[in-house]
Length: 256
Image (cartoon, rainbow, N blue to C red):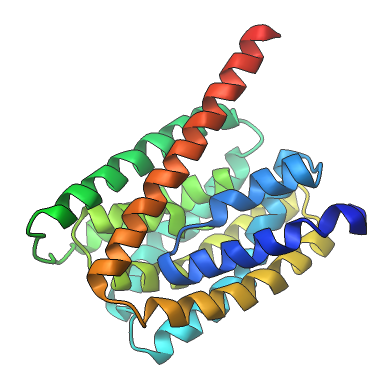
């Protein structure tokens, strides 16, 4: 991409980084920005974004670990599912129509967004402990879905954990760590079977790292209730955006 094309993506990259660092959600905006603004092929855009999450995820994990917001006992089991899932997702990326995955992800995000808002207005619920088998299954689903959509992990992991009553700050902290094996294995798969634009990935990574560091500090300076409300509103906004894009793509295919 030319420099003039990249300039409008700078504020987008910073904003996405802040959102990922604060509420774990935001990566869904990157791929459409690279495709519709930068003119990249969607498969290359997804692969390049996954590569950039290696670096932004490291910064996020460090920031949350310094503040003791990561449940390390849950990470290993999530890794056990996320690592093979990310590689399988990268292998399946050229085979599965993006519109199918987008519809499934949209439904999940909208459901959890509404659920989180309703729960917030009610009395809330107690946190529960997840079994190791459930954590592996969640990791597998997160790995596959993230590699196929180029969202890095948090977009799927945070809604699932919030739905299962994991405290939101813990969910966001875990999402920072889990995106590392997801991004690593997906990048290996993309490098072997696809294509990564390393120059674009590196540029995006720099912007994300700055934003994630700022977002992580913001997440630890608001109340748990406020943070959960922010996650719920963000989920609904992202779900509405994906639903609108899904409708547009369906209409466009019908016209053609």
